Image 1 (tube, one colour):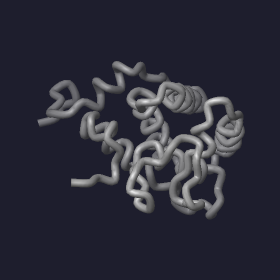
Image 2 (cartoon, helix red, strand yellow):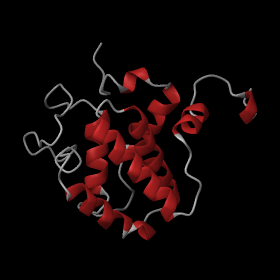
Image 3 (cartoon, rainbow, N blue to C red):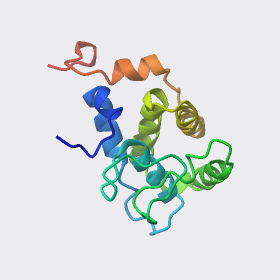
Amino acid sequence: MTSVLQDWVMNISLRQQGVLILALRGPDGAAKEDVAKPIIRALRALVMVSGREGAPMQMGMVWRDDPFMQTILIGHELSSEWESVTNNFYGSIDQYNIHFLQHLWHAFAVVGIHHPIEFIRKRCWEFYLRGCHALHVHAETSDEIQHRLRDGIRQDQGEK
């Protein structure tokens, strides 16, 4: 069976997969080329298989000008474009609701823990940490995130 999710995503907990899926949609009410769009397009390319190509996108490439997902900004290890895009996004975060931001930051944390390419993990983890800093909230460790997003009934969370 083929999945829209990349293989590495299929090897993490279902709760972590859910976090990723919930963040793949951009912010409601945003303009077509809102500053969040390049961030969302990069996230999609990091976790999804391209429906056009039938394979994950290669880092640093735009395939057939796909407006849905792109690695061109995040996927060049030596490029400073990702920093520029994230600066634009963080300069505008007041326009987004907290629910969208939480989903986005948690998704980047999951990618920052599990993505198979080290520099992508580092960029995504830094994006998550910057979000925590922007809202003055505690940044969870990798272990804390994985524990919180583990599968199964969690008695410590009052689940039945």
